[in-house]
Amino acid sequence: MSEISAPSPDPYQLARDAAAAIAEASGVASHDIALVLGSGWAGAADLLGETVWQADATTIPGFRAPAVAGHVGTLRSVRVEGTGARALVLGARTHLYEGAGVDPVVHGVRTAAAAGVRTMVLTNGCGGLDPEWSPGTPVLIADQINFTGATPLRGATFVDMTDVYTPALRDIAREVDSSLDEGVYMQFHGPTYETPAEVKMAGAMGATLVGMSTALEAVAAREAGMDVLGISLVTNLAAGISPEPLDHAEVLQAGRDAGPRISRLLAETVRRLAGPAPESGR
Image 1 (spheres, rainbow, N blue to C red):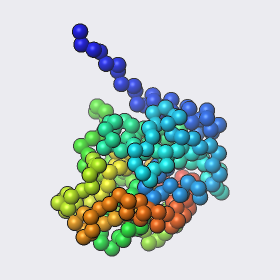
Image 2 (image 1 turned 60 degrees about the horizontal axis):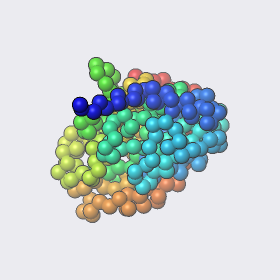
Image 3 (image 1 turned 30 degrees about the vertical axis):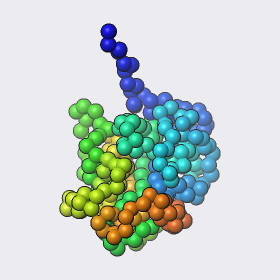
């Protein structure tokens, strides 16, 4: 007799369970804004306001320990300074290349939605195709290309992706730093860095930023009806753009070097986002 495998848990119910667990543990019934902190961005959490709760992410249903250096592996509830808004800070990110499937990749986003979040901020460290973007440059994500061959959507679920990254939120970020450029982010599956030929292909397709996260999370956020702000930190020039071989330690160092600037940028942007809600870019 063949073995009958247990059915997979409903990922949306798992997200609701996680949101309930966060509410119980933190004493915060709902949150207004959520942040996924990628490589180099962790310091922003300390500048947002008062942390009222923090825990190892693995204590909450569905969250996994980070597999990548540079991710802190904690969840926080923060009272955003000067606004009264509550921010859910997701320091644990699962990547598609870890092999757990798409649902764990977007579990944090779905949990945020179940916790009442209407604005999602996604950050990452990535490779840049524009030689003028030196390592340590933050770039707003204006659009994306999902090159993973995967999706968090199930069945005939049609989601408008015309403005996946809400224009009004990018305008607010530029109020904080008018020098911010915009780019198109392409998510590859990973975990290998892109080859020079793949980077050349990405550029031909319109991408100016390449990495291994974010796009699937943005799709899940849009499915949940959230507004999305995306900011990439260019940690290195992409393969074929830079004459130097890519090295993860150098990626982390670029994030550390840029940390104070991008943390201030993100914290101030979140404070403005937590004020009167902007018109949706949809």
